[in-house]
Length: 337
Ligand code: GLV
Ligand code: GLV
Image (cartoon, rainbow, N blue to C red):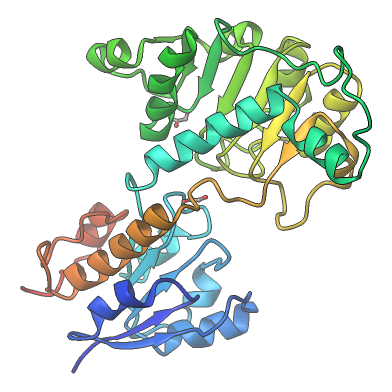
């Protein structure tokens, strides 16, 4: 019997078509948010699911998913998946690590430069028809050149952000749970410091942490208070890592110069005060959204599902499995290839 694959959203049909020789494929025709019971019913009716961040999958959603063997997340972050619940049910999970690193790093720089140079507010002003004369001292922003770049969460995206700093002549500090090997630090020209030093010394601070119970509100009122009032904060990681109410207060009161935010607590809702501030550049969670990268992410999800069912170049060895040890411990064997 061919496994059935549910794809929770429209992606790239020609990439998804690579499943067709080996699987029955059911693609949702439009983008929408499923209620938990609806999602549970979808998961109960398939052997594999390709899902996005809007699908929150935990024990309740998996209760009836007796056939489900693998959930492939169309994202590198997987805080939408309860990995313990998936592993306990003997279900594999995969993400799209690596293929989006460079696009997300580019976008972090776009937000950093855009926030420092006030691009969002300037564009709103022009579109509102307010450009009647050019003021020599209008729209003065901040140079990032030569200033200190701080990176909180130094995984592969953080390293890609660090490598770009050389072009701007910016020294790089980072903080991470685990320090990078010396050779990687040298290649990224990045120096490991404790979190307090990172907060105090960064002129520009970029957040690239995964969201976990430990990283929730990693940047709250106390952390913002340690940052320079001239600093620019960028979040391309997850909403919830920043306390958005505390951030809005700091931006409003001039305790932080500017922020560039691609992610929000409770998105797609945005803290209403952030929407009223001119020193923040906002975007709707699009850091990986280039044609090449979204196609590559789709291909990775497809490859992991095919590999899981014993097909393709990685047959039997899905390359992006998130829970191989847990599955092995639970005695779940991958299908033979
Ligand atoms: C997007 O936020 C991702 O985790 O890929
Ligand atoms: C968090 O500190 C991480 O290791 O990414």
